[in-house]
Image (cartoon, rainbow, N blue to C red; front, side, top):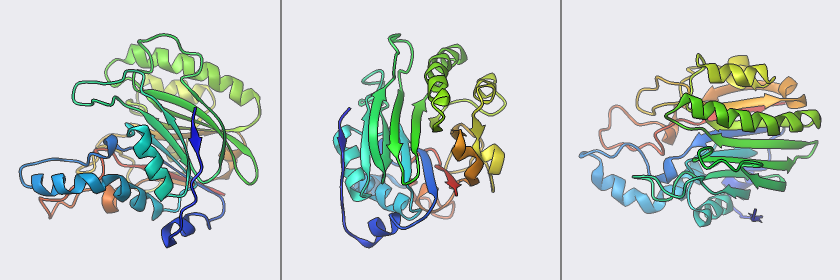
Length: 278
């Protein structure tokens, strides 16, 4: 998997390097298309399109993240440009199916981090074409104090039985990571709610839902107009779990629409989830 390292000047990029601890964000970015497109905002929507990747980078940099994962990401070249704007290393994961109706690039995944990426794998060990039709990627990053295994995933949105099979494969790989003693972060759009049986699988495997453990504010991640569902997560395991401080959904700024402005456009049809660790 190709990786690139970018060093970019500017106040926002510099600010992103100064915080202590670890801050991570999980975000389904809808390929930087923006949301929603309506008759009232159509012209603004079109004029914003070329600016969306840079707007995405700038909005995320306001939170000074150390790590960001994208579901429904962009093409690799655009992911590299977002990484450059954020002064972050990039690991890009191709979609399991290259295109869907209405989504000509499919649903890639991306890891962006200010830390060194030691290795990355796309859907490790999977050979079943029915599984991971969106994305699943694994990367290992080296922070100042430890190696962290990062899994980013986007599970099947339609069939629970397919999600369960996807979870089987992911947990087999994560079990090996758990035995290594390293911290694990698992982030993404899992397309199930906390009351679903899929959620219990992650819990039984020893993963900690950061929002359930230390969440503040409203929990929902879909949609940015009137959030009513929690389907995006940050899970943690290992030494890092004991250092969890807070998690929340970002129903704010450019991530949400303005109900008083019919022309407003959010960056995506999901909201990001953010978690802080000491």
